[in-house]
Amino acid sequence: MASLTGRRVLVVGRAGGIARAVTLALRAAGAQVVVAGRDEPALAAAYDDPDVEAETVDLTDEPSVAALAGRLGRVDHVVSTASARARGPVGELGHDVVLKSFDVKVLGPLLLAKHFAPHLPADGSFLFFSGSSARKPAAGMLAVGATNAAVDALTRGLAVELAPIRVNAVSPGTVDTGAYDGLGERKKAELFAAREATSPARRVGRADEIAEAVVFALGNTFLTGVSLAVDGGEPLV
Ligand SMILES: NC(=O)c1ccc[n+]([C@@H]2O[C@H](COP(=O)([O-])OP(=O)(O)OC[C@H]3O[C@@H](n4cnc5c(N)ncnc54)[C@H](OP(=O)(O)O)[C@@H]3O)[C@@H](O)[C@H]2O)c1
Image (tube, rainbow, N blue to C red):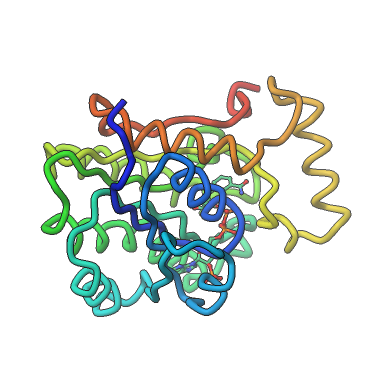
């Protein structure tokens, strides 16, 4: 494993959830972290650490991505956790909500690759977020699954195009990050109980377990074009 000590890593996402766990794991590995998202004050308030710098970016706005790349200059690794979920059965999916999902999670990373690759060293890498719904169809998860499958394709394509810069993804199963709170308490509890009953891991995941995979992917210099499934075996059943 290549050391992350002193390496500069950009983490795009929110102040909590997987992005926060990734930031803390990277700091524990000795990296300097720039956390960036649409809510810079919330990001700045979330870390009491001089080696975590907060920045602003909106991945659906190309000038915003280009400006961040210009402000930061050299960055060693770029991680994007950003997403805008488009849950629901096909009959209830609107054009705008599906477009937003692709805009944030597929085109956003594509723009990060476009504007940050020129600043990355040859041993740098990109790490994007996919999800197990790309590999396990489920009613109501059509657009989420299609978005994640596109992230997997983008990851493989960029790994070829940007080589020797490495490009990987992490593809989590169900992780309790607050991302399911929008379902309401009853539906969330039902979903988690179903996972506990059927998933080979017999539980939902934790954000720190996903963050471990991110640290591994950034440090393993022979890993590229891969979507690492960290999902408790959910798609197997
Ligand atoms: N949690 C799970 O069970 C699970 C399962 C499979 C895959 N994943 C994937 O893992 C990643 C992290 O998941 P999570 O649950 O921690 O987070 P999440 O709830 O999916 O949060 C993603 C965050 O992305 C940010 N975002 C949205 N649009 C953006 C934009 N245009 N520019 C910049 N940032 C934007 C938002 O932060 P602000 O609101 O602060 O702007 C949003 O809260 C996501 O890609 C998710 O799809 C998660």
